[in-house]
Image 1 (cartoon, helix red, strand yellow):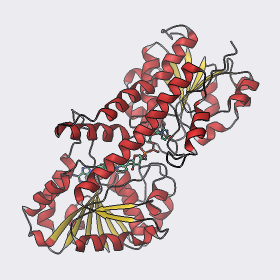
Image 2 (image 1 turned 90 degrees about the vertical axis):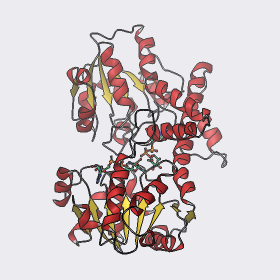
Image 3 (image 1 turned 90 degrees about the horizontal axis):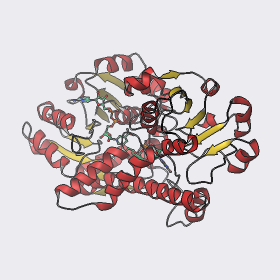
Image 4 (image 1 turned 45 degrees about the vertical axis):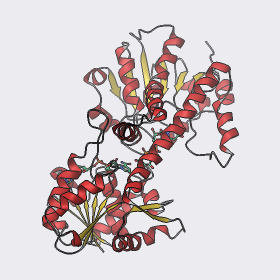
Length: 444
Ligand SMILES: NC(=O)c1ccc[n+]([C@@H]2O[C@H](COP(=O)([O-])OP(=O)(O)OC[C@H]3O[C@@H](n4cnc5c(N)ncnc54)[C@H](O)[C@@H]3O)[C@@H](O)[C@H]2O)c1
Ligand SMILES: O=c1ccn([C@@H]2O[C@H](COP(=O)(O)OP(=O)(O)O[C@H]3O[C@H](CO)[C@@H](O)[C@H](O)[C@H]3O)[C@@H](O)[C@H]2O)c(=O)[nH]1
């Protein structure tokens, strides 16, 4: 099939590449000329495991092309995917400017039957708005608007896209449903379902999934906070409840809060949508409040440990800047907030991340930049520091093991926001080790 992908961010680039990899001819469109220039030259602007190989192959074989001109891509396409940003507007509601700008252009570019697919995460009813905008310029018989929310996770995006647990297709049109099913057949050979439903339900399914996952994490973060008060260990609770298949093992890891480009904005947006319809979605309101506090909870632990709220003269190492491992994305990363709070208290920082130093520098404040030295190997972030703060669970932080900290650090004090190390080994290693929802080890 001929596919146009409008917007080549995470979702557009991964979807476009995977569709090309499964034999379709894909043209990706973006308004960012610099990005398109790089993509044409074979440079991928994001770090995403597994993407490079299939990108290079599809591009070499002529199935994956890039342009800034939407008119080069849409008229040829059987399917047009909208993979456009929907950032939070001022009041938490999703900002649909990019989606509607493109929808306004589509009608005049369609002259044969085309399926227009919204892959962006959008509030219920956006499909209706997109349909009306297109219908202003073209006969309604010539297109259908489908909702096909995307569930990929950054850092595992290619795997998630190639082997989805489910594909959700929201449409009332049999013709569009058949085309979409044919497109996705190669991706669901594992037997996982393609679920066809009405468009509004598909739009809401995406928000429900993210709100449910954010709630699950937040619930465990609150259990962790209780564990700290009563002397229990959240790892044991996780094992104890995760083995109940009704609860499930995944997304039960307590830490310093969820971040990223999706959970924070989508939880806000579903809260806003509910409010617009006169419904107070209380549980997600609490989720947002607890998560904001959780992001900086580690700073409170540091204040308690040092018995001070002024960190002037202290230097802290930071391991991990991205919002999760295997990505250079720092959107809503806890490290952004933690660095800011530490610098506000007068600290100097020595920061390391395997992939996200560049993106972090672009997003953080001038005050953080002025008081942070960025280093390019993890050992260097341990030099002469008063404590190490772990913000992201990159695999390489598991080595050298916890046993080595006593040799590597002048004062081995670790605040671990991701519970990387075994408590017994930390104790044996003679370090001060303060993690989340687990008993603290304090050798001082
Ligand atoms: N990032 C994820 O992991 C993820 C996963 C599932 C769903 N989503 C949803 O998918 C959508 C896209 O997310 P993303 O992370 O890929 O966004 P992104 O911000 O990484 O990329 C969006 C791209 O769209 C381009 N763009 C903006 N306006 C345009 C226009 N008028 N014409 C053409 N291109 C334009 C931008 O230049 C940018 O390259 C959002 O709604 C998001 O919530 C994201
Ligand atoms: O047990 C857990 C699992 C995750 N997290 C945190 O939750 C955030 C989000 O993680 P993850 O869901 O793995 O990453 P995303 O790439 O943001 O993916 C989410 O958001 C995407 C965009 O909507 C969806 O497509 C995915 O299905 C959904 O998992 C990160 O800060 C993680 O550190 C935890 O704290 N504990």
